[in-house]
Amino acid sequence: MSGPPPFAPSLRPGAPLTALAAATAFLCAPGLADASGPPPSPYGVFWGDGRTYLVDTAAGTLYDAPGLVTVTPEGALVRLRSRAEAFRPGARAAGLPAPASRRTVWEQVRSPDRRWQPAGPAPDPWPAPGEALVDEHALLQFDGDRLTTLHLQRLLARDGGRRTVVEGRAFSVTGAPQPGTPPGAGAALSWVAAHVPFVFDPCLTRPAGRLPLHGPGGAERGYLLAAGAEPACADRVQALPLRATPTSGAAGPAELPPGVIDRRPLPGGMGTLELVGEAAPQPRATEDPLALADPCVAFPVRLARNGLPPTEIGAAPALDGLTWLDERSPWLPWLGLVFAPTTACGLPLDLLPAGQIPVRADGDVAEWPHDALEPGTALCRLVEAGRAWAGPTDLSAAAAASRAGGDLVIAVLVRDVEPSPRDVVRVLTETGDLFVDRDGRLETNDLPGARAFAQQRASGWAVEIRLPGATAGRSALPAVAVAVDDADPADPAGAGLRLWVAGEPAGPGGGRPLPLHDVSGVLP
Image (cartoon, rainbow, N blue to C red; front, side, top):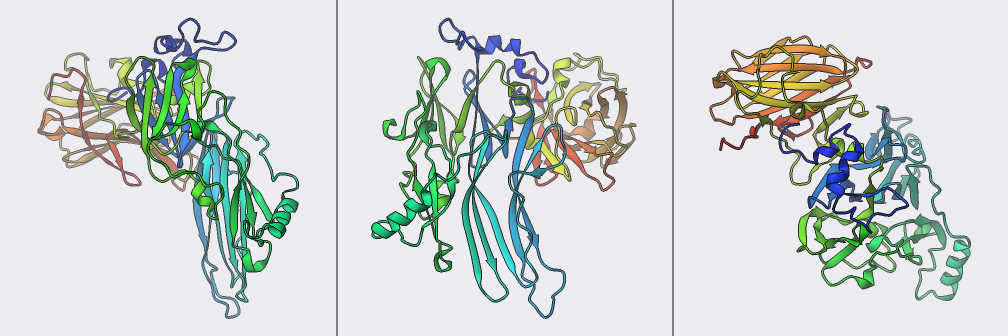
């Protein structure tokens, strides 16, 4: 693995969970572990504003992953995304205008699948010619299983009339039943509108769904959506709070000290995890349900362990769905494949001490240290084109470098069980770049004297690249980026993946070289 390892060695892909003992010793002291269940780990997972976070309470570090990611009880990795679509009729019919329509759809992919599938109800069909549709599902909250959205739909008819639909929706990744509209809600809204019109808009008598949300401390703070029942007020809506259900052991909003937005206890009462700042108070009722969503700003995350000074470990917009992982959690094998430090997604290529490896540059990477070439993945360094990543056997890789006779030798080990002749390793330097395929064929741009050797393996392939010293760069620690392109052999249209093993991803598919990381610490 290139660069400083993002996790303890116990969490390398494929490592046995029993190796967590060292990392969890501080949590597993007598009296802290529940005798009825497995020991806790130092890891907790939570979500906020469309991202997934991991906290390591032992190391005092915060990591994240792009998008909404979760793991089912059976161990399948599930990712969710919102995708925008647009539609315009190809030709005008009978002189009708052809306005554009747009919609957002929520999709999920579950390992080892490679195709995104609808999450929740299928979207409504596109409108007829001469009509325009705006159909959006705005994210309000995700708690690791339940996705809560606000559905806003507006249809402009041919005759100029408008139809508006506002409703709350909740979708469960595991298929768990979701709370529906409370019984009698319609009658209650009509009664309040008729008898207390100065408090409640008398037009809002149609129950439009329930928003099951969580507040500080994990307390349930669901809302009932009341929408306009008549066409004249169909676009008006109000979110009315339902009775909150507290979570055992967690601080509610009234118990939080000034300057603390949320506070959650660590396993075994070993301290707290806090979100620090001054958040806007949650409205008792609001005509803007989007105000119930996570804020678009990140607040400091503070770890307060018993007997130690509080430490700020990063930033996040919320602690939605915070779940502490135990030693048997299905999350553990995925941690090193999903998360990267919140500070940066870039990863420098490790430069191993010269002379440590009898480098022959023949494509056989067996002489390289096993720890230096442990294939991995991080979602922020993965580019998906036409299909989804299905897991570590679909694509994972590692790279390392060493000096040999003044030359720079780069070794890349790729795990990929479905070979394609379009698979390549690409290397970017400050002076040029090169491409090597599975058969060792080499193409270079402004890297004279470069050589490459490839070797097929049962689980993938490996390549060694030798760059003359002058070609690699003038400094002792030249900047290098390494990526693996994995083409889908079943898709001639070119669907595939790109994994940035080293360097910093930049743009939709590009990368930026980073200076090598001297693991010996000798070079400046």
